[in-house]
Image (cartoon, rainbow over the protein chains, first blue to last red):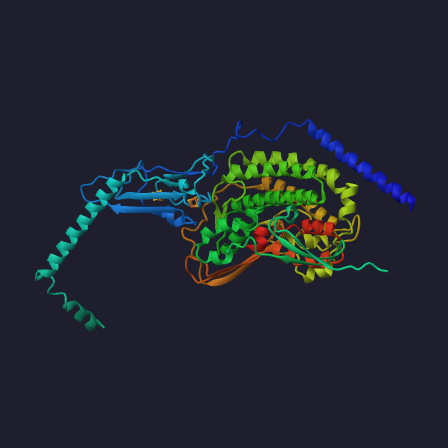
Length: 195
Length: 371
Ligand code: SF4
Ligand code: SF4
């Protein structure tokens, strides 16, 4: 009994000493921590942090917004009217839509990168900027759209006008007696005879 | 005259540093002795299963990461395997190898946290820090590959989001060489420490029969002395190509199935994972990792269940598809949740301080328990 007691005590002391030796060795290994924010880690090239959208290339296709699992991208587009040049993307695609709204809510974004892969023009990208904390959550709502509110109104107006003109034309066309449309009723007959 | 005693009910948690997240334990005590333990769950409930029904299949993956956030790669692999089974996708050889490497690295990282915090619960602070230094190295490897440190969204249905970084193989080999002596160091520092052994051996003994009846899986089951590991018993991915052993608890310092056994199974498993990684790094073929990615993930109607051996146990996904872009139902079989159920049984008749040791030894993550 008493022997066991001393054996236990001895092995307690001995194994603690073994551990002490390891900690002592670690005293002389270089430190693994860094003095953030004075020193910053270098992030690898694939690091995923805040998104950036290059609006010059964005065609407003909404694919990124649909891929996002938390729905933090909000896009609104207006069709351009003929004669209104939206421009071209850097890989030569012609744009047809005015992106009137492109908001990303970084308070919601989980940096999953699902929005980056489907983009046809590779204009939405992950950057290595990770220091963008804010005191107000509203400040995390980033607006990437380049049009000013006045421009947005203008684009919407001109598109609405175009629509109205088209609708008027259609209405006018419908009101006119249509000689071309006359043979139309024959078609169903043919089909029924086929049956 | 005997002293008048009364049972006392004590709440441990949810804000208790050693309940590993937000778990509340209701302890019925008689003095220092624990009569009964009732875990109260739900503080971290995020409606994962219901939420999946509103997501498309690939959109579920970021949420799957957040189940067992210490082993996100393993969760992704299980989910990807389940969906691939449903859609009948064969992934390229290279993808399988990269997946195995990632998942085994993740197993080491997860076990390092488990072992470190287990020591921390019992009062050994230093091993915790050393474990985190090594884990940091693994996380850096992941960050190099996919850009994220904890929640990767890397293993996709039918492939991977990125190929390996050109430096990865070299760095991973360096890591294996670097980490090997550290396992021995951890053993000397913590595993064979007399005080640690006194606190864990013969504490919280889980008999094999009880373990099976409670459906315990993972290292906690193997600690009770049975060789059951899905990587061997129901091989998935390419685990049948590798040579590795399944460690089991032997009752070295006490009875089979005590806290020390459960702890030590994890230590040995890390060594075995290193062996798998070494072999995989040697054999990895060239190839395209994105070639089998489906354009649209739209599985046919049907139900599927697949399971894998996660660091914490057996993780399974049951998916019902109605042929649309969103899953009709996703059910998770989480190892942490199932393993937690045995806590009451293990803690009956032990001291309060042992409850902490037992809870640490079954290694739960509340993100997975509550979902
Ligand atoms: S990174 Fe993920 S969460 Fe963030 S905007 Fe893109 S898809 Fe949405
Ligand atoms: S996917 Fe690309 S091009 Fe399309 S809306 Fe998003 S950022 Fe613009």
